[in-house]
Length: 356
Image (cartoon, rainbow, N blue to C red; front, side, top):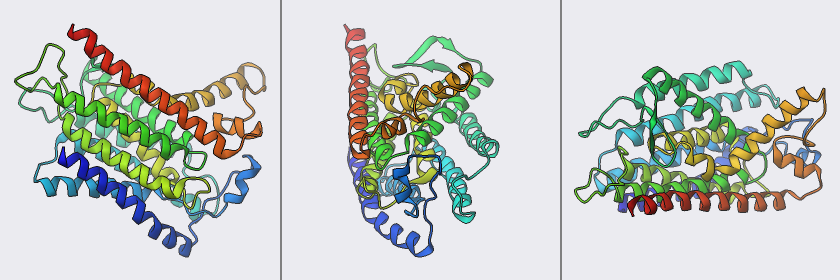
């Protein structure tokens, strides 16, 4: 438990204090955000706001994880390192994307195909490695079975298909987080709640782990639940500290560096904790926003050019309806909080019912 608390505290302080210096550095270099011309006109005032703030989030999480383990003299685990590797790897893809935008003074970064190829390369590497490193019970960081609240026994996949499933999850969640990062503080605030919820999930899985002598019939077959809790709280703390600077009016944006990395962390945690479909509920806000884009594109093609929303992702639809940005963000945070509460409730209720 000391490792968990220390990781959360160090990550929080890392972004809370480190972002201030990052803003000064980025401003001095002129590394500002370029705004889409076809977006809401209210966003034009944000042109030039420092971006690539996600680098501070990534560094804070990695440093917090290392410090927490060194201070408590506990070794890192395969699950924790792999999730953090996915988190940092996708952050690197986002950093390249952000750098192209800044260096070429435009709102478009990597070509979509190049971006997807880089995301896929990171995801495949994670997917292949996640099925290695069995512990003394033979459990690897990832499972061949598709999962909801735990592995679904009848949904076991062959290795090659399981890797493809992992790649799909990584691509879906990284792009979903990227689409959610459209208003000041929206993605960082929502991510704080989701990662905090997963800290609870991971601690519960550790307390009810099948590796314990006192394990009951409904124990959890998760390789490193306690270390995943360390990763989750470090992510939650870093996002919470970054929110101080990212809340409206934002002094800095996380950029694709931050949004892609956070999406990768969502995917990695869902895979490593055997809760892939539960993540759809706990991170339901990200799902709704991503679905709004898919619906907009699909309706546009089927209806011969008509739009379902004034603009997608969904948060921009409400902006064009006249809602204030702060109002949209707070209400979306409330929705995110409700989703996380429902997800945690389902997770706990399944254990209670199954134990009776």
